[in-house]
Length: 547
Image: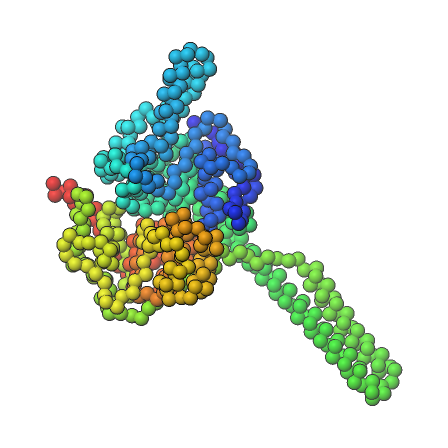
């Protein structure tokens, strides 16, 4: 169904600040809109407003026509010990609700009223458009195509691995038949094959799409417009991702030039006013000194005139300064100046695996043998389920091996950002945690966390209520405070805003130690400039080929 969403005067706020206000937006049937902005700027909140998943604070959202279907698919499946993967897909695609509503309408049809018949017809149309008729067949086909074991559909979502959760989320995206689809970080944890599938889905999809994503290559390939939630207010850019970047850069250069001209003129007038006043004061002082030498009245008058002329010039410069139109300094974004502290170099042998084998469920990873030496920038690549995270954790001593050995050098100090960002656990006091881990006093730890955007409001909340982006910032604060000679990053760009990603890229460029990274973010890997890429195969493909 073709249609549109019209939003007017939307406002989002937290207890301590306004995220956005007065936001007007129209989502037409051909829209491919990216919503960007810093962490905490209200991107996910806006998607929830548009989809109806969250009540409005202010303003209105109108669907045209009224029965337009709008869906929201969040970053990953809800982790539940009772809801199965199949039930989760049915719920988030709107199929489960439509099935229940359709059954209710079918029962009411027995009453024979015109109202019941009309309601049944409208619900039948929606049931059809949401893809309920062939839901089971499509689910089996897509999960098989994605390499998901059919047994997984009957398992609780809480037991899914990161790769399985990513593929299940992609399955839900491909299963959805909403007229307008809102996607919140759909690229998180997807491998290159998954990203390619998602791009094809976006290109082939007929209905409107609104998405939040940090993946710059994906945004460049898919979106036709960008809504930027800046501190100065929301602003819409047409023409796609590259056009948005070009226009932002052009505006920044113009603003920087205007501010530069204003600042130079302000400095010139201020100095001129100060210089003229100093000369005026010096002239008056000379008159007072020489008055004792009994200057004639003509000499006193001439010197007084010169002093007054200096004073007039100073006043003129002051008035010109007052008339000078104020020009604000361009907003510089997230000026974190993030650096990774480097510990003393250890031995040349940093991390190794010798015939290492990790086994889980019916899959064997390995045997795997590799050695990473000091100063290398290693990109550990491969499809989801190839064992990248498991092998890294085995070397760090966090996962046991079925056979073989793995480890790190004795003098290696490791800084880790893990895929789930769960190293914080359920810490009751993050300030004390950072102070203890980094050897800081409490006041310094609190200041450092504030620098990473973690205010008293965050620190007053239990860690389990923190977003993944907020937990990532706490990990980054630890990396900056604690000297390490090995940095291990597992999908570090997930849940970070674009400016934060650029800060991390700059920090890694300047870092002199060893880096091991798992990432499917193509732009991030390009900036990392790895000295070596270790590609892991899909173990399920290997298993099939042996059978």
